[in-house]
Length: 406
Image: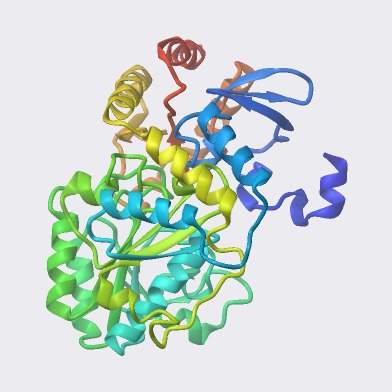
């Protein structure tokens, strides 16, 4: 839109929306229902963006719309703790036993930033380890690039990030325990935490190799560092208890977002009681948010999580598996965990970000636009996950595969 270009940097309020990775102009979407969205010209598309994750029930599910409407009519926010916060926290804690205390915030970025602050306070250490290609929001210390090697300190990955801040973050290779061990040994006694997407979803979907998460649990425990799972994308999408339940690994702290707000802005971080009791006003780690625990967001989250039954997960798994099977074509590969998947234009699915970067991004861009012309909206980057929702039934999957075959 011309007005957007004059009002917003690059014409957007989040960079991936600009379609720079695939070229062309993004459609102007004005309505969504179930698995479909409509543009301002009335064209209907099958949607695999799903607001980049939270719409696990599809667009405008009746129970979520009703919950938001009821909360809006009740007024608020009120500036005090409300019953919706308690209800949502109880559901989360019951499904993720690693979370004994939780703090709601307003974005995944805020949640990750706050979890790292807790880790530094708990350990008395400054350094953090993340993984190349892992994304944990745009907090300064997490926008880094690897230096000359995995054991070196990092350099800023964005203008405006101070080198002194970036140097507090070290970068290891996903699915490579030796690289993590080398970093921990090289900076023994200085690393506060290792933060990881248990299923990488910001280099495209890259599942953890067998034993990788278990190895991280052992290495961090031996080094006196905390293990933080960033489940902003995977939490309550890949199963009732997130990736930590799926793989049987309990982190010290967990970062959440997306689905727990039912499509509204939200984040949360939580973990063992003795760690979370460091957060103000219980402890000395300051973190605050005027609109944290907003009644509309809490209502949407409660309605969404209550709808996520074992039967619903089983149905989504069936349709996602059909999509995965139908997309397997020569010269490309598919990586999938539950309702998350990525079609990579490389012969084998990648195991880490370096391998993901060898994908043919030009081929993906051509495929992306052919799919868009055929009425299917995909995430506009080779390195984003596709999101299958409960509203994507067999007929929708068949239509998607027919478009892909063309």
